[in-house]
Image 1 (tube, rainbow, N blue to C red):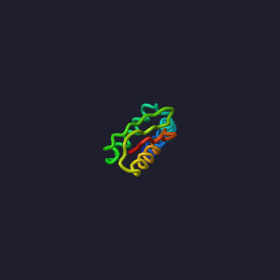
Image 2 (cartoon, one colour; image 1 turned 180 degrees about the vertical axis):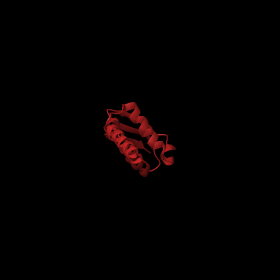
Image 3 (cartoon, rainbow, N blue to C red; image 1 turned 60 degrees about the horizontal axis):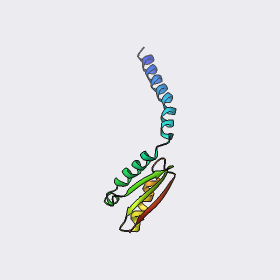
Image 4 (cartoon, helix red, strand yellow; image 1 turned 90 degrees about the horizontal axis):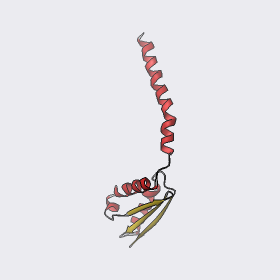
Length: 99
C-alpha cells in the first residue's frame, strides 16, 4: 500500500511539472514592454558598481535599447553594451556613452 501511495505521489508531481512547463516557457517568451525592458537593463547596469557610479540613462523603443551617459574609459562602454545585450527581449543596443 505504501509503495502504491508513493508511486501515486511521484506520478502526480511529474504530471504537475510536465503540465505547467509549457506555461512557464510561454511566459518567458512573452514580449516585454519597452518601459520594462529599459528598467531591466538599467537594473542590470546598476548591479555593476563601476557602471552604477556613472548613473547611465536607459531608454527603449521597439526593443532597441539606448544607453546614454558619461564614461571615464572605453571599457565601461564595452561592459555596458555586453550587459545590455544579455537582457532577454533586447534586440539591439545603441550605446551613446561618451567622455
